[in-house]
Image (spheres, rainbow, N blue to C red):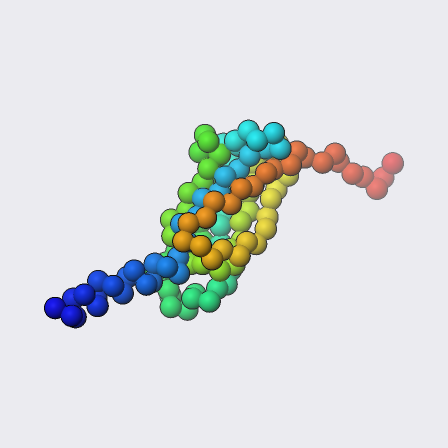
Length: 119
């Protein structure tokens, strides 16, 4: 009986080192940006070695109509988030995530005017 209780408890401890991540993408006015391309990559963390190949560490997806992209559990630690959307500057930043659930809010900037050294 003790053995079965110990087996059931093990996955609970492993899940504490994972985070369910949401990326909420908006423009500067707070309007959701749908169909934005979101790339999420696990960079490094304290518990990376124990997950091995069992947990996916790279995701490429798009935001929904509410501007949200939901990532299934990914290891906690440094996570690179890149967002590309037509008509906006590309966003890229590494976030240190140490929570079981996290929503990262990304505000996209409008494109900058073209710059040329040739006048």
